[in-house]
Image 1 (tube, each protein chain N blue to C red):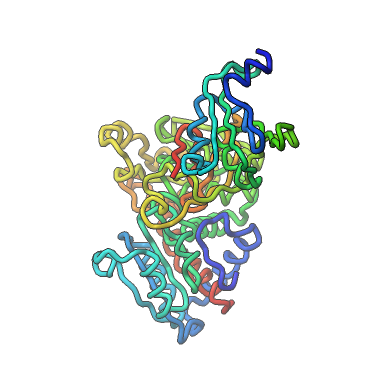
Image 2 (cartoon, rainbow over the protein chains, first blue to last red; image 1 turned 180 degrees about the vertical axis):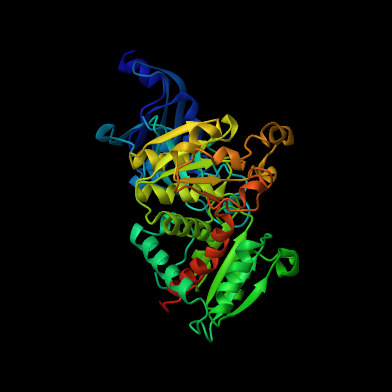
Length: 155
Length: 302
């Protein structure tokens, strides 16, 4: 696919951030985690786009907004492969990948229904770990159970 | 350890564990002292208990401290819908330390974060039971003369048993070899097995109890807990999986001791009780000394 076609699918932005290589099924989760469903900024997104690397992918472009790394790293749980491209005056000024944070607070629910965070007004806290199959898991600071990616529910 | 809450066994380092066990041995020599005179300990049991609550209260009173609290959520303001946070903040005004058992997983960690006085977790749901773990370690050390490098077999409900989880985690600090005996449905959860793997220790899994008996120093029996099964039919399938009787101990090592956190149902036949290798009732007595050590150390009196 050439650059011209790409621009036809999701239009270019003058200033802002492009989040590329999002797994196609995770685009709406990323939108929610970053609060883009409640923003005043212009947001474009595409899902099920062709990707040489991943087969299909999603992409999100936000005009006039740049993310702090703590903020953007929250999406690592659902889009660890995402690339972050910052654009100023149509030029790419920086390109980086999402880093998986060590700790996550308040974004995700603990999957254990008997956890204190699901019983009282207590905000969730997790440490990000990898199991023996290199799968990402969230170890709950309170009930000490591990929430796997299949059980992820966002608050 | 002064003023530090005890929520999970992993809060204590190897040295801190050994320090508690040393102190417990001192209290075993002299369990009645005036050490806690003038101190008030709150004992909040939101969930029923026999051994843990009574051994804590006995431990405190033998040291001259006083105990306030409740033995069931029904007799507290919890029934009026009071939050855990409000209960803890209120009780902390009246006490120097809070011992708490609560049915919700993670409640003890949360209480320790909101409380201005230290919290001792006496069991939080299916999560942790660190004081039981310390008394298990004390019992192991006392009967074996050491904690290092033992063959420890865990039998029964390794999936839901919070005492199993705490003790396995603690023993990874002491180079144990783990023999895990359970029905396939009740295997040790991977979150706990992870500790064994990270410590690069050996573990073996069995379904047959007889296979493990000749090869271990400690046989840690557990009850298959009906109340933890989401489906009663699943409980029926596994409830009689293990039944240890005296004859089965014939080929066991001479130093073997049988431990059980109690209460037991039918997993240990009563004919084992008179065998000198049965240690579960002494184990329950050790709970008093270990809890004296924990309270005295957190209050900075030892």
